[in-house]
Length: 99
Image 1 (cartoon, rainbow, N blue to C red):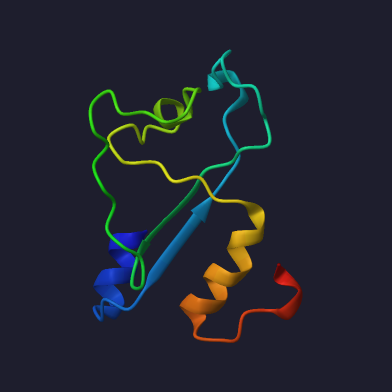
Image 2 (cartoon, rainbow, N blue to C red):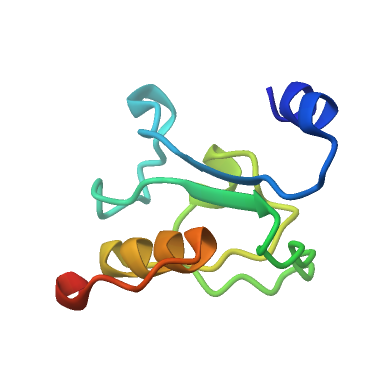
């Protein structure tokens, strides 16, 4: 889908924000908190991902592997971070009550 959108618009100005629910059957037994969801972003206004350094994992779970993102550095965000992020990407004022 991202390739289709980039091909159609070919302006390199599209930002992609993707989230979802974890596949319950694939969730690691080490996972202590089922409230974590993948939130992946790329495109205009988003820094390129950094490669994960081998053996340099800050998290005590297997989520990067479950989500098949283990080759990238993981940065966890809180739900409160989403409204300001989307506002900035849209070029609008950050909602006053988002914090």
